[in-house]
Image (cartoon, rainbow, N blue to C red; front, side, top):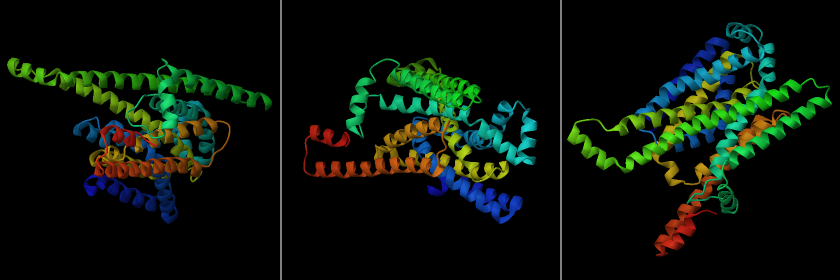
Length: 382
């Protein structure tokens, strides 16, 4: 099971490390290994959230996620994305941006750094919406009840998450503009960039998340009529419409996963420049890490880990919220990537430990013949 799920990750690791040695010797090998570990540590919460979505998709779309999705994640976000950002912000052609990345690495790094406010605003708003929509939803299982219960009640207000996100964006852009004004107005245009990029991230979430949610709801409604449609299909000899509907639902959930992965990868791509400004080594290291995140996602789904440890998804979403705040803060202040990674690891570790305690409490309650109402209270959170 383990080899089947992580087999391609092991292969990519071997090929990537070998390519690093051929490209830049043993020093390059060390850099690629560090970048791989960086990507895995920063994206573990990504794997947990992805698993919560991927478990709703069939085996075919899980394979698509591991094949086509990997190509998008590795080549699109870890190699093409930094080049595109430089091309747009520096008003250069993609070819010139690639030449710059290969011939003048310091200038290339500086251009990517200059593009950071736009990247952070887009990714921060997208991730913030994910966190808010999760925390405002009324759930049967709650982890931190003292936080989640009142927020679930507030979540009944329509469009609350959108309003809060826009307020956060306005405050961020205003703070950035004020900071720019105090320094002679040199960065006023960047304040506007933050606002536009943040709105773009919000719109992207609403479109992709809305479409995936729409088709997922349609799929659930269709499954309720599954038996009747099967009988009708046998009588008429026609295929059930649920097959096509499942395909649409899976496609938009796949699209949502890719945008989600893109938002998660922002911190990894930006953080990689603290280690190297060589685009080849960066692509190799982050690509290897992305493969393990993908394989870990599928492993969590196939092992039913999220069903066994029910607070993991909560911890991952709290990590998303923390990452969103960190991204918005880094528009003006520098935050060490180690802190970013540790926040996610601590929150997920805490949620895992809480899940273990919950399972132990449930097992003990069942052994004592506890009533169903008491079992519900035990399982609802800490």
